[in-house]
Every structure is written in C-alpha cells, then in structure tokens.
Length: 261
Image (tube, rainbow, N blue to C red; front, top):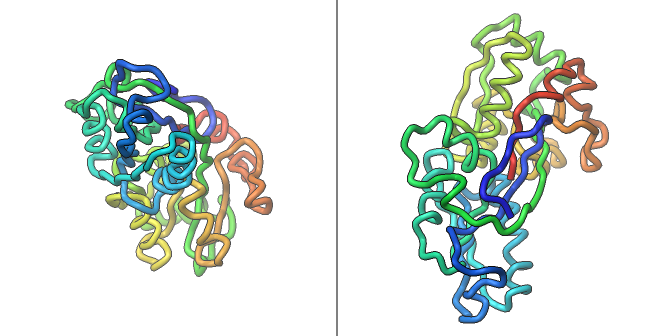
C-alpha cells in the first residue's frame, strides 16, 4: 500500500487502495468480525476509479469472506470522500480508492483539507496503472493529435474539453498539453468523469483526455474516436491508436502529469 501517491514521468495514473490510519496489520479486524468493508470511491459512478473499485470489490469479498460495499462519495475533486475515510474509525473497515488527485494534487490546490495525504492513511495495495486517452466525438472531423493541435491554434479558445473536475487527471493532462503545444482551449469541469464523457458523446464539448476504463467502451462502440494515448507504448486494447510521442510530441509523453491510482 501507500500513504501517498508520487508523481512520475509519463502519463499513467496509479490507483492506491488505502485505509484510514490503522492500529492493526493486515488482515483487517473486520475480516474477523464479519462486518462489511466499505470501499469509498471519492468520485461519481462510471469513472475509472469507480470501474476499478467495482472490479476489485468482489475479489476482496472472496479473499476476506465478507461483504465489500462500494460507496461513491464525490465532491471537491475527491476531497470529501478522502476526508470521510480519514475521519472514520481506525478499525480497517473503511477503505479509500485513492489516486494522484486525492493524494497529491488536492493538497497543492486546496488550502484547507480535512486530511493529510501522508499521515491520515495507511496504505494497503497499489491497484493499477491507467493510461489516459485523448478522445473526441465520433462525428468530429479531427482524426489525430496533429489535426487537433492545428485546429486549436487556428481557433484559440473555441475548442472545449471536459474533465471530472478542477484538479482532476483530465484537467491536469489537458492543461499540460496546452502548455506543451502553446494552445488555448476552454475547460469545462464536471462533477465526475462519467458526466463529462456523456456530454462529449452528446457533442456538448469537443474533447477529453481521461482514463482508459471510462472511455474504452465508447471507443469500441464507435461513439468516441481516440486520437492518442498517454502511455510510452501503444495499448493492447487500442493497437491502432498512436502514443502522444508518436504523434509528434515526445516531450509531453516524457514529462506530463498523469493520474496515479
């Protein structure tokens, strides 16, 4: 586990499973009491964190021999859910799906948090790395990252992108892309990744650059078009989608921020 996620070069995010500061070691006390474990997702349903949590919950339940309940507690870039876990009784019954937003970014952008990313949690496990994918609506004329950047330069401030909220991975990744390419795009923050993707599918925004699990089904169904992936290599699930580096922006791939789960 990890008490705090650390930002690394590259644009993948790592998911950490953490608990409120524990006075006990693994296995949890709860595994002996039979009480259900609450797995707090500090974001709305349908985002990458939620998808990972719901895939993890039944495996935890089988390993512990008890119920594991996924509990979505969105708000303030994940800070509300993280605060609730930090203040929960230190009995191992309340877990947090934490990532770079809750454990690294929020302490930098919110002056007053209800938790300390290092002292408030005990790490349990590193769950996953999740590359981000730049996607546009399938009806968009844009076919690759180069075309997207050229359009952004020709229409400063007229292209918009959605994110799961201020300080989210999509927000940070896109802002770094703007800095790298010297472009200006309009940020439209949402209360979670799922609604931000829904409005992209509906044509209300022009793009998003978010975690693969949240957009992969829509890419496969043809509702979204993937322009580039943030990982160092192409993804097995999207073999025809080039990396940002392959698309002509190697500096972005080497140094950009990504989400860390």
